[in-house]
Length: 324
Image (cartoon, rainbow, N blue to C red; front, top):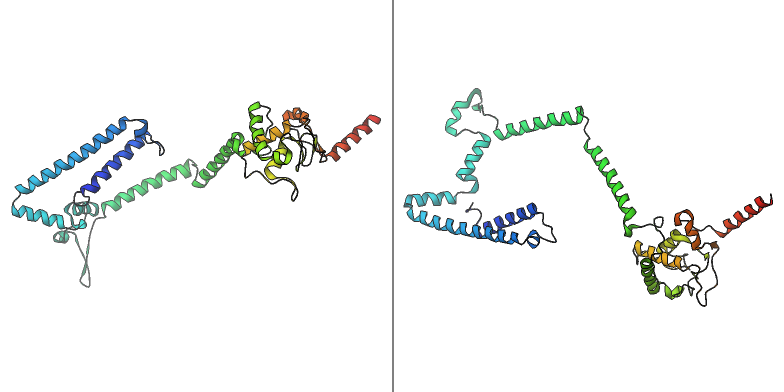
């Protein structure tokens, strides 16, 4: 090991392995290592580093003493052994012989076969142990695979993948139901909580008041306090209008790139809270869709406005029924 890994590589490498092992055992995080949460780990790391350096110093001193006690012949043999390539090292040769079970040249006569072709003879070598071991492993794997998937009907990789994808989609949908910044217009809910309305008012005053006035009476943009709506009232329509913008070419720009869905929900709640108020110098009503926040009580607060034409038709039908 010393021949292939010098001390300036060996010590940092062993210390790094020990450090990551401790982090894995204790459960440290990338943003907050274990030694920051548990200061005692620093003491343990320091002791390990001290032990590494002490072992290296003792080993170096021992090698120097042993080298002085060697005879010139022993020093020459040691130098020759250390100069050998990695593949020629004695321990590598011993390992390869165990893995391949090869015979030395002078032992080949014991396994020589009678077969002779044009002076070429054949050796009756045993199969390499590594190959035999690998064969046994594959055989055991095949038996387990056969029993699991063809006898006990275990899930194949395709079935496992499909089940995991279904479970993942269910988790995503469940997360979307409660994730405030993944709201959709259908999920938006009106809130009269003072904190929500205050947050919505702050966003409205900063970004919307220049077109609708601070009191919602309307300037360039329409009046937000009356019951007339151009693109519909209710949380769904107001949320969608703020997010996607108004009518092409004449309405306001989409704000979905500026606000999070949770912020749009707050602004929409504040806009609806302005309905029915009486601002000074209010702009004339615009839009044919009639809706007021009183309708929030219908269907759990999620009722949306219907176009004025439909309301008119419904009124006519009711009149006819009454007349009958």
